[in-house]
Length: 184
Image 1: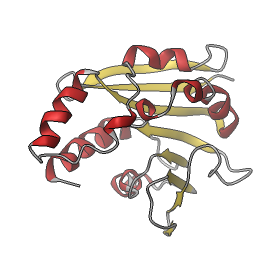
Image 2: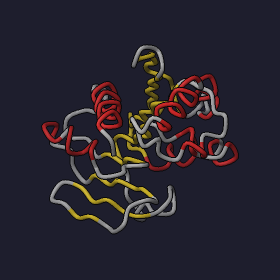
Image 3: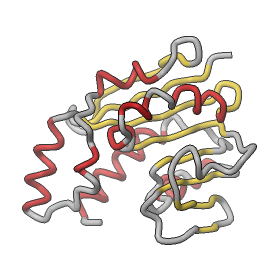
Image 4: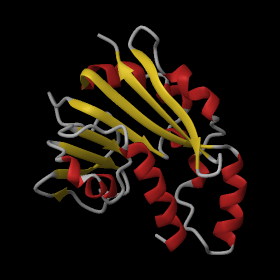
C-alpha cells in the first residue's frame, strides 16, 4: 500500500469512525489489515471481526479477529454486531448480491445496529487509473467497481428494515458516507 493509499484510507476511517459507538461489536467487511479496529482502539470495541478474501491468513488479536473469506459465509454462526462497516467495499460487490445485503445485515445486527458505508464517486475510477499509472496508488481491485454509483446505495436497503441516519460527501466530494440504522 502506497503513501497516498494510506492517506485516503485514514481519511475514510476517521470520517466513518465518528459513527462507531464506544463498546460496539463491529463486523468490518473488506477489512484488509484490520486498520479500522486499530484506529478505533480507544473506543474499546468488543468481539470484532474483519472479513477479507485477500487475507493471507487468519489473524487473532486480543480485540479482534481477521478472517479470510467472503461475506456472509465467513461470519461465524450465531454472531451478532452493533455495527457493520463497508469502507470502499460496496462498489466491489456485484449488483445481484447487493440486493441481498439488507436482509443479511438485518439478521446480523443488534437492536439499533448501524451499517456504515463509504462509496467513491464514479469520477474516482478515472482519477485512480491515472494515479495507478503514475504509481502514486496501488488502486486495489479497480476492475471490480461494476459501474456503481453512490445514488444506488439507498436502494440496497429495505425501508421497513433500515432508516438513513446520515449521508455526506467528503474527500473533496469524491467520496460518500452513508450511515443506516436498524429499525425496531
